[in-house]
Length: 128
Image 1 (cartoon, rainbow, N blue to C red):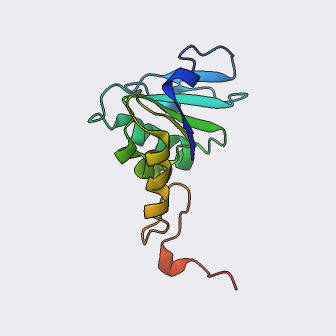
Image 2 (image 1 turned 180 degrees about the horizontal axis):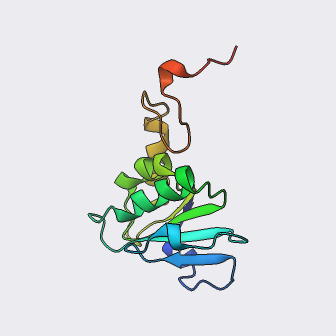
């Protein structure tokens, strides 16, 4: 997952290929042709509607572009964000990028399937 500092992210969708989706909007209503990135907003870290939007965009709608988490994004959320389909996250200003990257090293494999790796661990073939 690509981690982005708040200062390096523009909050304005500066291209027709980028959509900023409110967390109460229905992704099924989007025209996804030509869209390369969708920014999904977490207005508070306790509001998880963007997780559902990301999963819906990846699994049901087959969106292949970048899904970017914005807003009140904390280090503790990153692994779950990645598992629900996010490619990138803009960390809240007070979050440390190095500590955030360490989250992915703590959890390298999961038993359950997710939006990215659909089959559960027991159904995955090991690389020989």
